[in-house]
Length: 308
Image (cartoon, helix red, strand yellow):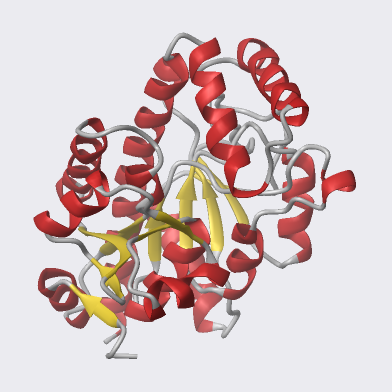
């Protein structure tokens, strides 16, 4: 493991001393927006994690290593390199063995976090069951990763381009707890509510931390999904964003776009249709998720420390 795992000293020290650490994905940097906006966003997210009591650990594969925590040079390389590989579980061995620059999706970030001993991860929205999956079989690897990897993921629900009811059914089948943070409804990325009520809703970071401590102490492996709705001032209501999504989905079908290329295409088209509002909403929900993940991680570290 030590041959392929490179943990930034600050992150390693925090893990060793039981301090709060929050993992961050790198796909949003490499594939989410152009340079220099991408690196500015990454630095801001890391700053928000620090402001709320945790150490940030952005994860990527660089130079044949799973890098947990990126220095300035690595972050710049990721933000400016051409043809950065988009990594899920199946792709990570190739990126390591061929020493290519790879940006981690939700699934790959969870794997890197667990390898390093990090329990919390903040992202925008998870992947899930795609619309029309009964014909295409298109289901994100993120869902199985949540069932097998013991990392808690804070997101604004699932990406609105997905079939959210089917995504939640899949998570239930995998035994993944889905917690509404300060909301009883599952988030729909750009919108605060998908209209689907959750069985678990918790109102404080301490409550969520206690739940996760109980889960993992019981030996119940696997992650948990914490649905943290986008702040209301940045919300794009379902009635407005749904027509944009349907238009983008139809266009993708017409042009035969699928697999790894589907989500980036849909998000880019929705950005165009909404005159850029969707991009700002995306940024704001990522910032909010980073804050909440840091607060929960801090409470979890305090609970674990109190037992020692």
